Length: 226
Image (spheres, rainbow, N blue to C red):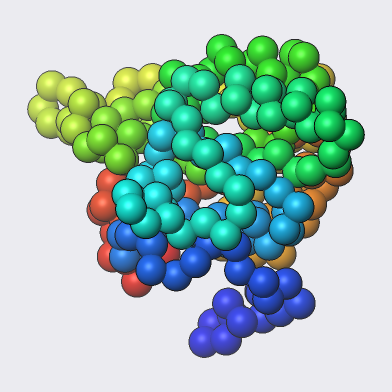
């Protein structure tokens, strides 16, 4: 596997739309995911980013690592903002990719209703969920994406409580139940697959790609293993 990553990214575009020097933790996969996703989207893209780890590490004032038009939104309103941008572009006659990055806290929980509404309206938006299965940015609290039995600061593992006692919300299935054109799961471990799925999602909108994002801090593994 010494050259495995080189083989996996062979043939992908060399252009970078997320600059180095961002403040992601060592081993954080979200920067890798963002780089791969934006390579698939290309320069004709606007990014809407809900409050999340990615938003924090890429845009701490006065710095910003993005090379594409980008807007930060609160947990709950990334989808409505994307819908507004889509309406504006339609009025202007522009065919521009609208790409939403949401953490699981926004997609599964706080912005879930607005996301559902956007899908029901068939607004031409592609949503990428950065799913690290907890609220890592605010202290590793459980979300409805957290796996059954998992430790978080709000679902400790001990003699009485054995971690989270609920199964995770099946967001990918719920998105598919809306009847939208494209829904997929993906992993940054399979770069070509993620790239291809984003390409398909951008062609069949609205779409959702749910990407697993293992967090070394919250999942407690060595950053070198990402």
